[in-house]
Image 1 (tube, rainbow, N blue to C red):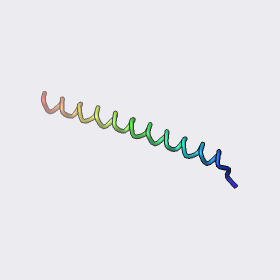
Image 2: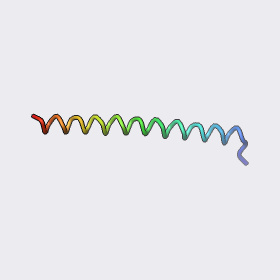
Image 3: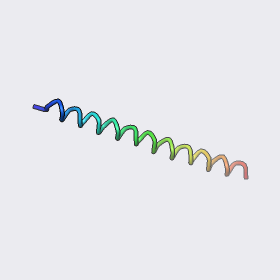
Amino acid sequence: MISDSQLNTIALTFGFASIILILVYHAISTNINNLQHKKKVQ
């Protein structure tokens, strides 16, 4: 059976990973929107 410390480690790992994925997604989507906007202006 899984111990409390192992469960804590797993939960923290998935939490940090999800935050990093959200930040990466936000950065990519913002850059794509900026590039599309610049192409429309030109």
